[in-house]
Length: 140
Image (tube, rainbow, N blue to C red; front, side, top):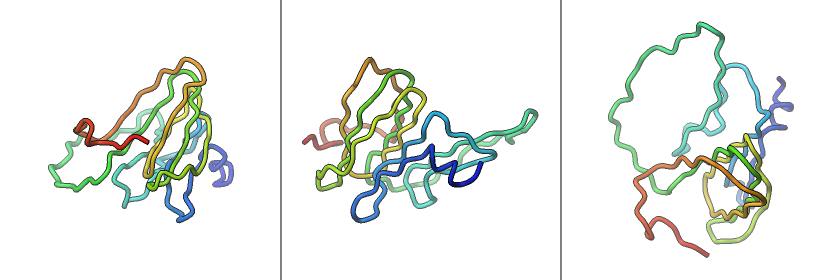
């Protein structure tokens, strides 16, 4: 798959400062090998992987490395339904609205966001923690 074809399945939502707010990985995305959607400086690493039958991932453990995380990052995996997503700057200015559907993956990187369920929705949320209650977010 060419890079142009690959980009058909990825939408970047960008603020006026060229800061990535979110990455949408569409259900139809396919690529050989390992594709990272986030760069090494991102507090959240998201990748797509394919391996041939018989490929071995060597057993491993992850080392205890202290990291400083400043913001809650989230990944939503849409299992069912359609979700309208509003993306905002950190200053709460609406940048873009788009829809994600079954099989899409939404990686929330910065700024704000809000959602409207367009039909019955089932999704999986993955985020860094621990969650600290009301101190974790500012609603607007």
